[in-house]
Image (cartoon, rainbow, N blue to C red):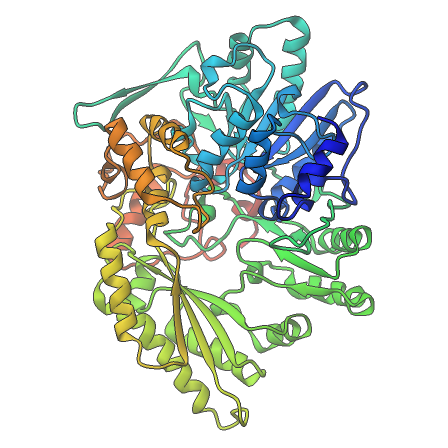
Length: 614
């Protein structure tokens, strides 16, 4: 299709800037001179994908390699997909507008379980066979990385290679092997066997799964000499890790429309519900000088007037005071604001507030997660009510009149008393505001409480726990509403049905592949979007395939059960996770990694917090 025809069709859809390309910072190469073409696919809209730091990093890394041209591909919204199908227009990449089917490797990042039908829809739009076994040659090799790869089994039939862990090094190793095998005329099967022997590479077709009569897994059996377990890869030294000097700057507003600077990976805290806190272990920090230099370079090259310091818990960065001091030397002069997400209640000091006030004028956000101390101890949040109240008072005394608090519903061992404790805590925060002697005159307070439904995730101590069913979730939501006695506290939550489906795929096995395929045929896509999600279509797909979703999310697991991800090694031992689960049921807490090493297994890398002097 000609550029003129494409431009004409884009005039008929919302936000044509999603599909135009040619933004500042996008990389255009001569495809006749590049040896390998990589389509980096984000299975959601342009605005969501362009906000993702991992995509920005790998896009720049691949394109810094002479022989690779990496281009971006996003899921078209339904209006443009309709236009594409009516005009027989295949899915294309933004930089060249060439069809995705012309690319050697097609890579997906899997950030959320409810993007799986979008993966299938994008392959279908590209005219590429959905099933791995139907793609016979090396052309159009489909690979995937991201946090959902810690349990990739629901997509095992569709993806050739998964990358557990961090991709900066292993991706390039596989690309180099691909080039070698392609030039030698090696078969796809032989290439996959060789790739499976690279650490951090999982080839699902080389592992068979046997089931027991009760539908649990009996065994996961490697074939052709591949490793019994696949160990994740990490970048050991972030100071030496590639980081982009510039980002692609969108023409349209995206979700997080600012520069982003990574300060560290991992988390010391060990909250028992938090998958990211376990799969990104160990904590590895960048030095403040490097963070500062990279941040200034990004702002200079992109023109962004806001930069966010990215991590799982930014206030745990040991060099934060030094870093902010360095950054303020140029951000104040250049009128660049600094965003500090992921602040913790227990280390939010008046000094840090003064720095936050310089850069953030909106309300503050914290995550107590549970409404009572008992349940906070169960989840190992290691935050006391005294610290919550002190932090809110610090904010109020500093001039803030609103705070947002995140909680979860359906946590293991939760009682109605724990639930009511959420709104009671909100009321106590409101009372504390009005009891301040120096309360701002003529101003009222707002405590915004957002409640999400707990989803048990792999590689956490709660991977063995059942998830509440839909009726119980809805009962608890009504209880929360009834327990709220003030308009100063506002409650909100997401659609619980999406959380139920997320729970199925988070801990599901390969048999869910047929359900995803059936749901895709039924028209399911953009399942994470409220206006697109169709719970009944999903339930119809489960029924047609003879698969019961309750088996996957409403059932507890014994410690000796073989889990769908048991052959993947994220360097957090089963013994540690089981011990943490036992402590949770005793409401006993575990110190964070800097206070005391718990021998979780991440010290096998001999890097980061695991070898810091204590």
